[in-house]
Amino acid sequence: MTEVEIYTDGACKGNPGPGGWGALLRSGGHEKEIFGGEPHTTNNRMELTAVIRALQTLTRACPVAIHTDSQYVKNGIETWIHGWRRNGWKTADRKPVKNADLWRELAALAAQHAVTWHWVRGHADNPGNIRADALANRGVDGARAEARRGVV
Image (spheres, rainbow, N blue to C red):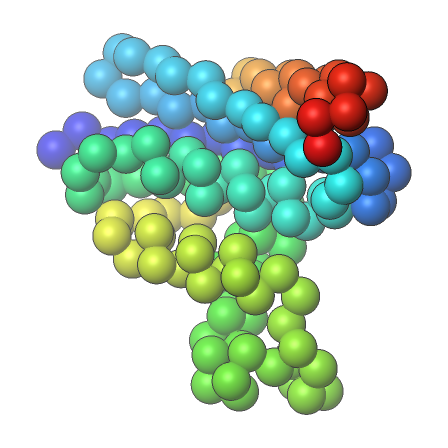
């Protein structure tokens, strides 16, 4: 089965503020770009949303390599989530986990695939990350435009 390579990024203009997410998916010589945004959100929510939306586009279980410039996403899904689950979605100091709704969704989607997680330095000449960043910023632009039109 062909591996799907995914590059994701989130962006926020103000934190919180208008935000966007973007993902580049590659497999077997094909590419797909997806992006979106929200008028009032945080950067971490957009980082998580980018990975979630990318995984939602997959139509069957497959090996997936996810490349993110977010240590929050990579460390959260590989390490911290185990403690959060064990502690009833509370942090080590017994506070509710921020973005627990998205962490649960991400964990469920990732469990459907053979996912490997890769951290890439943001804005460091990685072509996949640069494209994902541009897509996330398009999402911010769309969220701002919707807010100006009063769609929110």
